[in-house]
Picture (tube, helix red, strand yellow):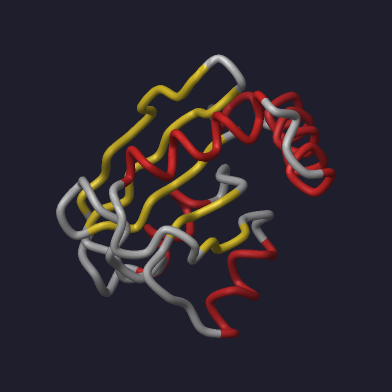
Length: 125
């Protein structure tokens, strides 16, 4: 599954999902995580942010509002605030270990959705 991190410094979760100067996207599975893309964006280009987050199941962010959450949810992306101001590496380790431990029912469901999305949208990978 794809996970994004909203960041200002490419190292910490410290930005808003639709106005982050950088979005770092990783592919995460039980085996580990690998970097897909690190994009620098203009903070006022909401459409570019939405395009990048379109294939992600989660985005770790500093905070969010209801409108942003709704826009991202329509794309199939949930906002996670549990690692704000913490290192991206810590968030990745947490997700990998949750997947290895078979995680929650909700996380397993999201992983299945991610696999189905990848099958239906090979051009976006």
